Length: 189
Image (cartoon, rainbow, N blue to C red; front, side, top):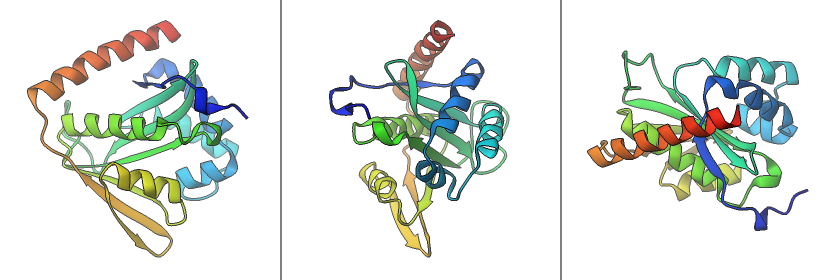
């Protein structure tokens, strides 16, 4: 198991279609507990691979957390309903993500969540929802840390992060960041 306390800051970037093989390998690498927490139930390797392939072309955005060039955390931003054409995702969206067990507790999950929230804000999302299993304490703590209002009911925790409207500065910053992300993705290919 790697010593992640000395790990350099992760690189968080948007994932693009050419990252597909990396995404597939990531989902297959997840241990059974992490995979079950991410998908809120057990998922076979075949089902995880099918999900990974479909996720790359689904509505919304995907972000990766890289440590030493390897995808170690993955976050998704998905609209709650069919978005209007263009850049906007709609008023509500959902965030979902997981970090490989050996790379937790070093800020990777928080960095992914913040990046997802910024992208959601700039795409018109007002309420960013997050769901997890009630016993997934690390995810509940992370959601609370970034400001989500969580409620536990039955075996699930459900919450929302209420986002501010985008500003010219937030849109500009994301545009610059995405251009840099695209350059990194091309370099990695």
